[in-house]
Image (cartoon, rainbow, N blue to C red; front, side):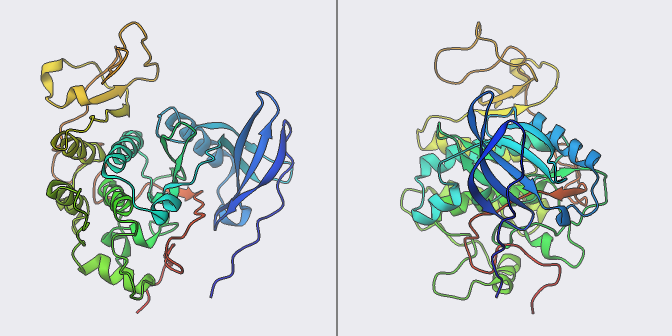
Length: 378
């Protein structure tokens, strides 16, 4: 039986006052601080030195810079500041999201179809933005989707790229939301692995449990891995979920990576079509990219996709309501891509970009089954 680790004492940070411990995990502790100027509450994630795997201060700075780029996305947690404390612990000061994360919410009660679709599209857009920057998340799950004060999802806990080929592809992953290829003797992780995790996360929001968790049965790591590798995806079993939604989830979570959607944006567009079928408001897909402008007749899905440049706000052209597009908008790539390549430009079967995972999971969801170890149980 594992013993929950006691959080380390909070660091002394100039300009910040410690308030309380928010949580702890295998890679970091998270504290609530109050920033003095501007005055606001912030979550401060402090990495554990023994979990840095020899990563240098320069590598941590590179992580912080990439997170700062990604955090301009409306569905990614905003990073305010990064540094190293007086006791040599790297830290990130970021947006404080006080509401329960989606793991807590979905365990209490399954979300509505409408809210689940909206969240699924918004988070998929965030993941697509990361993929276009060459970054794989590698630990998408409900506990890593926070909720802002404005009820928007905010994806957190990225494994950030450092040097290609130097990361452990199996480290930091959470079994209930991990794809079959991650449990191979030589684990593989690519864009379509994140697509699987997006589908598994959406299933969890809709069902109130992870996809291969069987109520009343053993749900340890070995049992979950066996089901993930060989058992078909269960049905949602809710009258308000159309068959088309089940079909989208089954494709996103196909056992073979090549049978899944080839990108996060393709998954998001499939969810938009379900919204249209249900006569719901269609959630736009916000993507950060520096692609050149395209003509509106180039892509039938373009109006539902907002591809944002670094400077993308144009109040003169933004309508007061409904779907909006900025004046620098370009179109997302088509859903198909050359064989072996995702539309994000990362080989779907390539090993992951090297990273050191800074993830913290406060809610395991299934006792003893949250994070996989290098050796598989028999």
